[in-house]
Length: 369
Image (cartoon, rainbow, N blue to C red):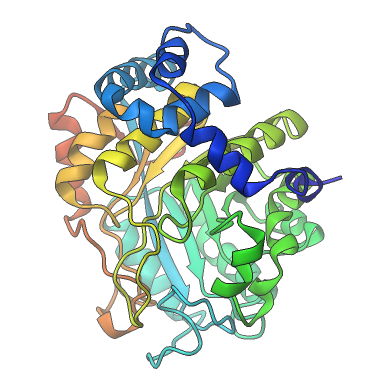
């Protein structure tokens, strides 16, 4: 049994109606709880009725986060290994239908990127690829992990879904964390956004966290692509998924990311745009619902927003990100997946964190907790 069996019993429109029917009374009751908040409370927190209480949610989220994680922000950097992709995702700059230059880093180029990244001070690296099973498949990923593992204290992946046995083998080479975003939990519309390629298989992608849990991956990163469908309903589905995973794979840690659609090669326009205030509402809702989940904010967001949002529940941030293969050793902007919004240097981000009274953690922070 996997989460696919669970989600089949969930009606999207009924779930949406449940959220939008929440009242001020529901929000206040949820805020006044000291702990053990339920999915019904989460519905209230992401509902329109909660918006007038955003300041209260933010203050409470800050206190909970500092109590659980201290005043620390873990820093990581993505290394894009390849922008080759066989999928036709309508919203992605890497889509095979987009006429961009394609590149996959060689075994000689990867160490060059590693050297540039190490000079920036990072100890946590996230390896990223498009989904191309021949040019950037399992064997390529395994070799890449082997090439970087001795240089970083924490190695993460954000790549195409793999089989359980493949994830299990990668743990032998130092893999710690895997991020896998469902993009949308709306099964009917999922096919519209993923018309071609292996990614069009909704069930296989949805069951990836189950395979990761069975393989004993230390941490699993979840998320939806904000802008495809109603963000409140997506958030509820993800909260249900998180609750299911924590119960079944209780030894595993979890994180949630908030990727809002950003400009890229192509002409996709978000169907359900989210403003910054709503993003704060979403982040704090997750923190009030789950005190232990890590919350990550990338350079998709502006410097000004990240300066303020990091104090409201965020535990992990990227810095100095380049979204094109080879972008650290040699700038190649025409290869990038999306435009970076916060283009500050890692040092500048670190200084901002320290100026706000927080500690920037450059390595695996498991020693802190």
